[in-house]
Image 1: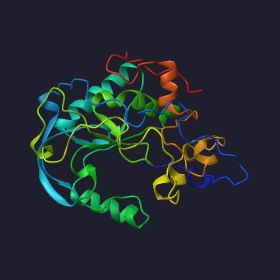
Image 2: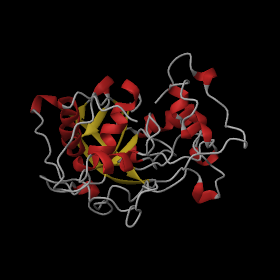
Image 3: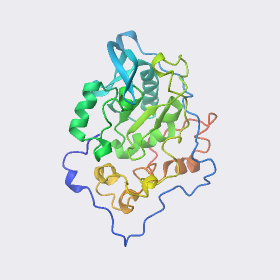
Image 4: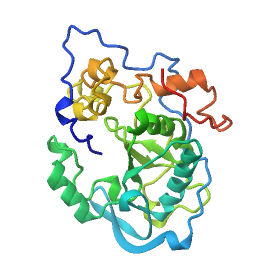
Length: 287
């Protein structure tokens, strides 16, 4: 994801210590809050054969080849997604569209050459850059998808937070609100061979905890970088927690500075249960 043109020089510096930061973790009843619902309860979409591309590509995890994918589906701007994951992505995008929310795919599967080029451009994350080493990104084994979560005042992020778990997608990088991965139970199809040795179902908050502050696992030394704050995209949000905490924020906080799981608990009780109804968030402005 890139910062909109012209906004790079408008990224605010961290607030001074004289500012009293807001709560950066949920103040709800946090008993079992970091588990959340098991993901992947929705049925996959049926994708027409004409929309499936034959493109043999090797898959990698932890630097090792784990298999080969042969069928891909193209999404926005030519982003390819492995078919076994694309069936859930298509179902999710269609459900969001029915709610009036556009879910735009900004990155999907990456070849080894594409990941190497990204490392060259962005630098290694282990050395202070933004990219995983070639062979180590989950974009290279097919389960990772990046979304444009900031458009329309953050409505895609709000919708995904409320609904993506049903389609098997959860957030997997605490400091990146756009990065989601498929960790569902392969509802409606068999687990693909390339995933059998390492992929198992997770719960919604099993990676990015419902209760957290960015950088907390490292003594707060590595907060969310300013280019990832809501303020970077909307400079007028000078009272947003991202800014007031210098990036030591709970990254489930949305555009309107509400901790979204807490907000949904209040507005839509049961949103995170199998029995809970799917309530669209389009037109539901954060408060």
